[in-house]
Image (cartoon, rainbow, N blue to C red):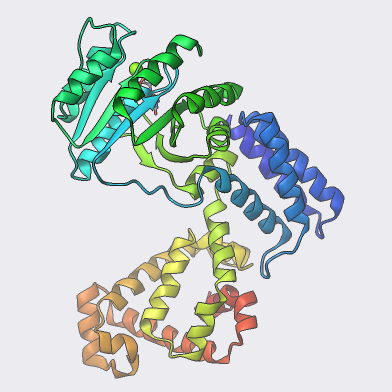
Length: 436
Ligand code: GDP
Ligand code: MG
């Protein structure tokens, strides 16, 4: 399904690039394609309409300098989606707390309870797992075994039917500081389930009331999120089974409805398979747009004109040079960057993209082997220093000299550049200086 969604959006985007200048009809087309893509990822219909309206409006509006219309639209889509699901990497408070997991049967609550316990355990806290699923016969054993596997204390009462009784007894024990309570689900929403989970939370008074939703939940996400939110006041969302299907649209719906953000994602069956939510990764996955991170990085580097100005005004040190190299690394593989700089084809012909990437990496080692003095004032690097740096970083002396020569070229270029030029042609020009 990820493939389907991905292809649709990609097609839409490609059509936009193909069209040259963007007209209103092209934006309408794209908006319709985004609508279809979101719907097939199971995002709630009403939400899709609201989202695409916003995207349409912003897409036709003012564009930041240095971005193409297509890039601008991808950025807008990204911003609108992360506005709902969380704009930043999830922050998890590392302190004693009480956590309650809610969700229907099979959504991944019990697995997630163990995953969370493992997460906090690795962070040095003491988790305590409590089984309040008194409905499913094997629930007790399932959590008990998981707890044993990760060596975390566990409490449950086999045969007891009242989860609040179990919970009260569990809380009399002092087995940990992050108390994680697994609850029972049902095949469908019913009032028994809602009453039960309310009862549990009345005893627990959880700090975090987490809705666990599987990525393949479909349009049912809305109803479930609404019911659990009304009962508990959902504070966080965890999306499970993202390794199996990448639809994930239910997450968007649930976040929108509860006003909470995605905290973690589940990517497998073992207690290790939990990741903190990362907006770029998640959205790239959701809309199937693998280059998203690269593109956003580009958008940022274009917008972040200040640091460039600073560099031109002040001295361009080896640290600045390293920063440049690192920003290139962050942006993804060299070939992508070269593509963006419009040099992709020329370089691909020469067939030395991998070589250039390797070179960058080696230069980085060399810079890291320099003293502070050498970094701020590379003119002091004489041949005995070159020898030392080469030995320290495992490079040939000729490579260190090549690095120094390139650094000097860039430094000279930096002085010539006006901020405007740097903004527009920055990387292309940089690469030319590298002899690429
Ligand atoms: P619960 O009924 O809500 O407690 O759900 P469980 O934790 O028992 O999970 C139901 C099934 O989904 C089990 O077979 C789990 O192993 C599986 N499962 C849970 N989370 C994930 C996940 O992130 N990825 C995969 N592939 N399977 C998962
Ligand atoms: Mg369970």
